[in-house]
Image 1: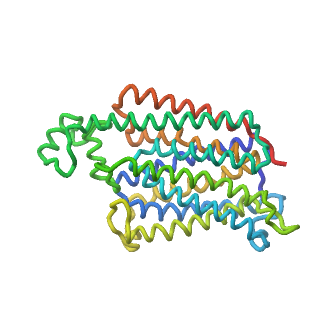
Image 2: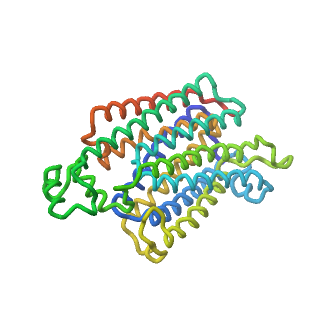
Image 3: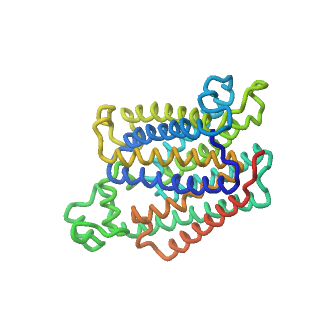
Length: 390
């Protein structure tokens, strides 16, 4: 199997993982905003997410002189470590599923900020002690503090942007009670030109609400925040579970049984994530949540609108997670949690693709810039804490 041995190689893996893990949520959000049911999107996503793990296992897990390789470990008596890997896959799948609904309620940027910060505060601390302190604490924990500051800025950004949107929509009592004439009149005075609303205007927000799959007007953002914090707790546990699977710090394996390599662990990790996602999303097809319309497995199979994007999201997430684990195995999983600075990438896509924060107040822009700067500092500091696993 192929092993990352240098600190530079580990940091390269982390940076590439940061790009991938920050991009796939934007793609999932894009399909939802175009009206595709999140159940359909997630079923497509989970297929290619598993396929990415299989590709990694059959290539990197088999090449190179290091042993044991992927196929060898499938027949070894290592079920204890396999259970840790599968537990990590389960909590990650639950977290990803939850964020898909949270994005609609509180926005892509804020969701990623809160979940990433919870993940770093809890997950990084656990990984630091599990890895027997191979990461430099005097560097690592100031980086964690930067994430805490970033989440405070993120909450302030959400509150300020929500107030901005409320001001834009103050002429609208609700979508249901606004007549067609009123809609046309107010839309014309709020940015609707040549049949298309300008991003950031009241008309744009209304058009978005009409075409998206998850309707959020008139619903409390508290729902979205509760879902977001649940997702953050799930995300904070998957990396420590994977760490236990590959390094056996609790000495659960029998004497002489090799530890799981990162590729075999990732394969089992992805299998459990796939099974959980499959079961829950098929259930949500027939018994949907949050007011979504009922669907069916047949309707899912016939829904090709946005399927290619959903497949791409699954590949990006799968390869991103694999790269994060490869970097963590080499330089410490606490340092690899730097990839949780993915709001740097997600916010860029949120602004570029979805018009988030367009025509917002100066206060919102100031808070947004402050948040992003804190994430840049945090990712630099966490990567600087990288150690070397012997």
